[in-house]
Image (cartoon, rainbow, N blue to C red; front, side, top):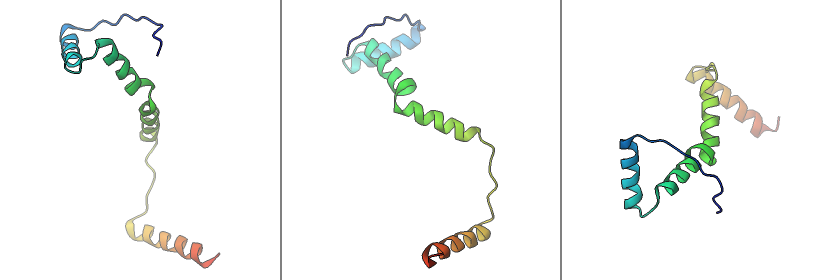
Length: 85
């Protein structure tokens, strides 16, 4: 991986100390920890999942029949599927 962009990120003392302590424990640089966080939270595959989940949660709730009615509907669908209709 070629690192070609330099960023300046300001952290408060507590944030930096926690990050530096973890980086030291994992024998990594603070920069590598930040790059991993960017990949995991903002640009990795989970970012797409989070976006999709947020879109689903933003939708209006849909009406759902009571359990007995739902059971009848499912039985009808299953009967049609297996009867060749």
